[in-house]
Image (cartoon, rainbow, N blue to C red; front, side, top):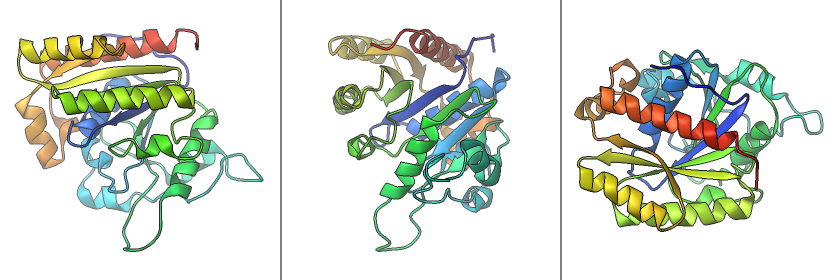
Length: 262
């Protein structure tokens, strides 16, 4: 991959409607940053965590990643430091990034996951030493943006993954509105699963009409889809088209993150 600059301490949230390929895209982006020689911490906040599979871990190793302690407010009232949490709970992955698992629902009627989201929010509020990119793969939907304080309130850039459907564009529109209310400074869209020029044009026109910038369009790649089913996306050479699209997205994030907050 070509060299792309990365803003120091970039905090990047990846969100989207269920089924758009959000976690696969998050894994590819985390891998891309790591391939550039950046230290990446990837945080899985899905209550059904599987980002580890997209970073090359086996299912058993993904299940073995310890979950961050709930309501551990970083740096508050004697709470743990952000670096201590990464050191104690982070696990290396074959793709390069260090993986944190923030939330896991493994017991019926165990209550809500609000306290786990509070831990992630406080983690993002602190500066992680020697970490270039903190990437947060959020649970599908919008609920995490409605929480008190907002899980991603301290993110620099929110990436909304879309597929070429009107429903996913509607989710992007709603996401952008909630992000603005939270004070998240920048929202970018990522087009995914594009199979034709018409799909690419749909992303551009539909998002532009809503004032949402399109950072790049990832073409549908059957090899990525097959690798995702096998849980080995990080081991799969992506096509030149996918690689170019990933570079477009990283460049757009860098340009956006470097812009002043509005």
